[in-house]
Amino acid sequence: MQGPAKRHSLAEIAGAVGGRIAGDGGVQVRGVASIESATSDDLVFVEQEKHLAAALKSAAGAVIAGEFAGGNSFPKPLLISDQPKLAFARAARLLQSNLSDFSAALHATAVIHETALLGEGVSVGALAVVGAEAEIGANTSIGAGCVIGPGAGIGRDCKIYPNVTIYSGASLGDRVIVHAGAVLGSDGFGYVRNRADGHYEKFPQVGRLVIEDDVEIGANSTIDRGALDETRIRRGAKIDNLVHIGHNCQIGEDVVIAAQTGLSGSIVIEQGAVLGGQVGIGEHARIGEGVMLGGQGGVLPNKILRGKGVAFWGTPAQPLREYLKQLAIVARLAKKE
Image 1 (cartoon, one colour):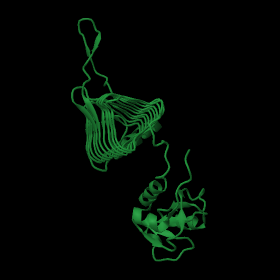
Image 2 (cartoon, rainbow, N blue to C red; image 1 turned 120 degrees about the vertical axis):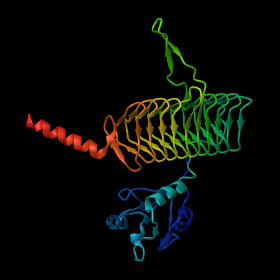
Image 3 (tube, rainbow, N blue to C red; image 1 turned 90 degrees about the vertical axis):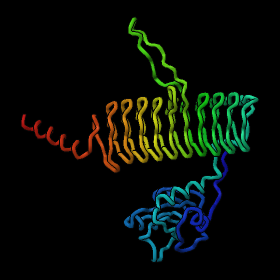
């Protein structure tokens, strides 16, 4: 059972997240909250000056605010940051660092193969299975009911929530978070049709899945191993719930993929791209660096979308301005009928 969160002074938090104190840095908090629900134990944040008055009138013990709050005197202590939302997120991690959904132990019902290598501080939950020659880095937590396949590798300080399945040979870096029910490294959807009788036969799915450091994967998402080579999710990518990534896909650094998105095989998503919810992308397509693809957008096979910071929308996906122009033309035509 979780105990109460540890209290931290505002000065401690400022030192950890960056920023300066205006007011009493000795005020202590132990949680984060919205302005509406905060108590005196909580920290809140505002990104815009128009919301500062509401934060100061709230019950919160302290406020994180932007540079607009600097140089003034207020009834509550402030932590001033040029990126208040980011500072708030970092403060939340600090305040919650002593809370865990995992017990730091190997549960009596866990099945751990004698050849598996577990680092210092690893926890394995009830009924979890760790296969032969699997490697789990220090301070990583494996939730109840997980299956870690033979030869799978998991780095340090990872959190694998309950009922995750990691197939044989998959590799996860450090500080990876995998939420409940995700399946990593399963076979890709690859078949060869026999022209003689029309039947399908399985194409080899013998490649690897490599997930780099600081990736987060949402609940019930699935990522296939490569067919002959590898599927790779690069550092810092954030993948929402119910996302499917097919075999041989290459997902770049700091890519964000929202829920219910489906990627066919051999797709490249370059660094910093953002995919909205329910996006569908055909095989061998490429989404360029920094492209933003709106919800329910569709990209045809072999298509390339380029333009850092450019928003694409619709099916087939096109720059938002063109998409809106076409909608306007269709609307005018409909009025004429």
